[in-house]
Length: 130
Image (tube, rainbow, N blue to C red; front, side):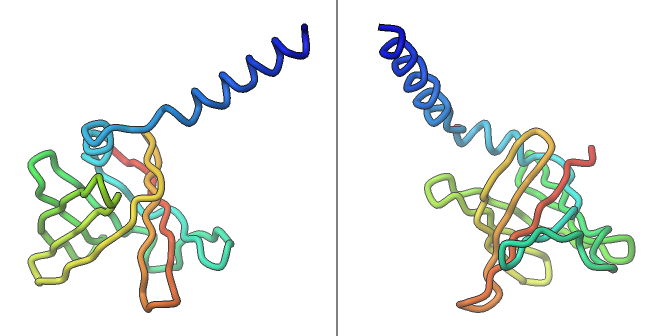
C-alpha cells in the first residue's frame, strides 16, 4: 500500500509540473523588459558571449516597440510574439526582420534560438537587467 501511495504521489507531482504551461499573456508580460546577452549555446556547449557582444541588449516595450543595440549603436523597431509558434519576431527600422524561437522565459532569464543557415543554429541566453 505504501508503494502504491508513493507511486500515485510521484505521478501527481510529475503531471502537475508539466501542466504549468505559460499563457500567451504571461509570456508577453515576462518579455516586456530589458534583456542583456549573457551567454550563447552552440553544439551543446554554453559559453560567455564573445567580446563586443557582451553589451548587446533588447528592450521590449509593452506597446510592441523595441530598442536594441549595444553601447555604440541603438536601433528602434517593433516586436511581436506568436504564441502558437513560440516565435519572437523583431522588425528593426533598418528593415531587418529577425525570427527567434522562444525556448524558455522566466522572471530573470530569456533563452532564444535562431538559425543562421539551414544547418546552423545558435541559442542565446539573456538576463533581465531592469
